[in-house]
Amino acid sequence: MRGRGNAIAPVLSHHPDFAAFIARAPDEVACGRMRRAVATPTAGPHGATGLGLLRHDGVVPMASIAMVSIVCRDGVGLVAAITDHLFSAGINLRDTTFAALGKGAEFTAICELPEGLTVARLEAGLASLPELADAQIRIAQYDFDPAPGPMGRITHRIEVSGGDQLGLIARLAEIFAQFGANIVRLDAQKLPDSEGGRYVTRFTVWLPAERAEICLAAVTNTAGSLGLMSRTEETAV
Image (cartoon, rainbow, N blue to C red; front, top):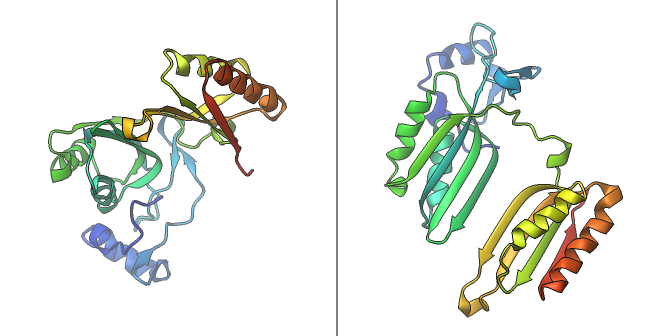
């Protein structure tokens, strides 16, 4: 997914290959937008896959895959500032998460870096944003295949809420592991006293169909034994 969907001129007009590309493939440019060159995905370094823009010499350069992790003070417009900068740098976002953590926040994304963009340059650009003053920015090569496997598909969302219970996440995670479930996303939040002071834990999981019913029953029974409420939502397949 792209950080923004507007015209590419600010991103590519200065690129040395841009004029040659326009001359060779005018049909690829319409309404101020450039379509990605159609090509068969090729295995990249460490099994990663990705498509680059077609160069004037006909070569499809491989996109480098990196993980961008930012921990900073939370604020209005933070996600907009980060994603706008990544878009302007020609970066394609893959799996991306954001969470407010107390008065701080964490942004993590798997990114396809365009040819010629170095990690040092990207890090320096992010660090220059006013919204990221004093932020902890870490950019590292991502050595795993960015394409999710079957167990990355979400089948159920489970929410458990009530009073804070020591070791609750560990107990629920153990149940999921026991029944072969894969936790895709986890979010736990302590609500303020004005909202009841409840502790809410949300699991987004992949469950094997043949064990889903018994696994969800075990979660419900565990929550009930602790005086907690649980709610389950099955996602559309």
